[in-house]
Image (cartoon, rainbow, N blue to C red; front, side, top):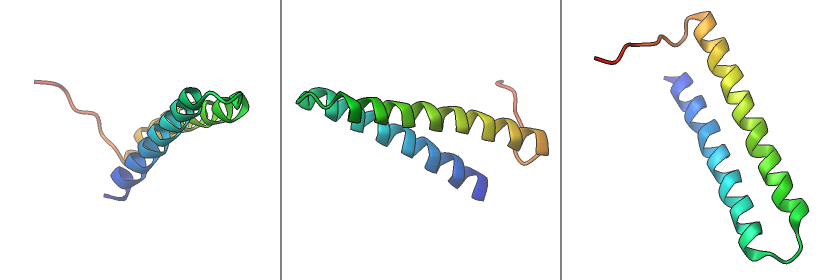
Length: 68
């Protein structure tokens, strides 16, 4: 159960950073550094989530299932 909470938390952080970058883009007061920082965090968390899922799969904490 803790694995699902961890993965969901990281996904929520990714979505938060995406919308934060959108806010800075729409606000558009020449604050492109804040938008770039938010997008950088989003990419970093996405890569981190991918690595985390690979580690969880390799250790057997998550199992893939087929689509019927």
